[in-house]
Length: 145
Image 1 (cartoon, rainbow, N blue to C red):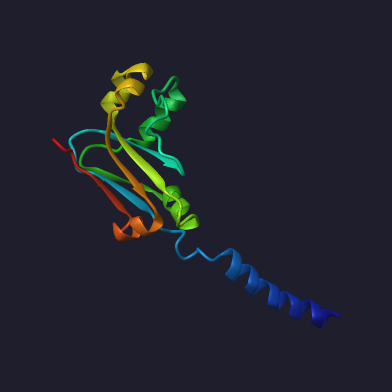
Image 2: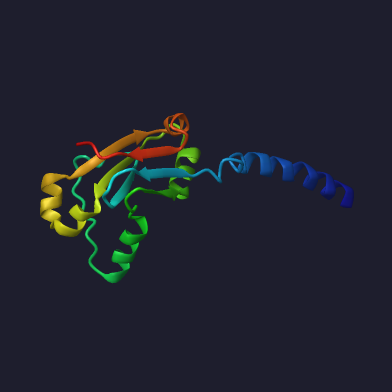
């Protein structure tokens, strides 16, 4: 009986690991957003659906939301990695990820109503895993005059 259990265990472990862990070699992948402008920018991500016609308000209302906004803000002439976003693309290779870049000054100075009316999107991308791979997992924001 013990031999049968060992054989079953030897068969089940590889099936579990190779089946369930299929993307482990890619899980360390990051999406890099480079800010080549002189402005602080904020990337906003939408999975599956575009946010072009949806009202959003990302103005912080308390110190925790302010800290969250500060965490995602990318300073001028710098970059920030997005590990979880890369994992989404790896796990859903045919789905589209929408990335929107806003200037932090617009978020800080505009009311939610103004923000939704004017939609001050500075740049946007709609990408799949194949797109991210073609761009070497790097999105570059350059100020367009």
